[in-house]
Length: 95
Image (cartoon, rainbow, N blue to C red; front, side):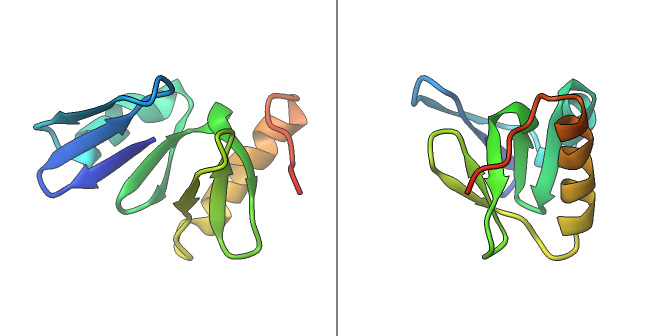
């Protein structure tokens, strides 16, 4: 997951480490959206392959069981994008 922190961007990687980089989330959105990332909220960018499901409270639940907010404004876009992945078998719906 990638989260904005003012004019910085914080990367959370699968090893558990975090990295703080002095670029905006918008810059990474442009670079990473073609690489299977999706903006779930104004403050979050997530690799779609790590999303297990969207829960009833409007959070993307990741494979490590952490939760990332999906904004109401972006919910339809996120669901549509994940549905496309489901159609090709790379995203699984959880409970």
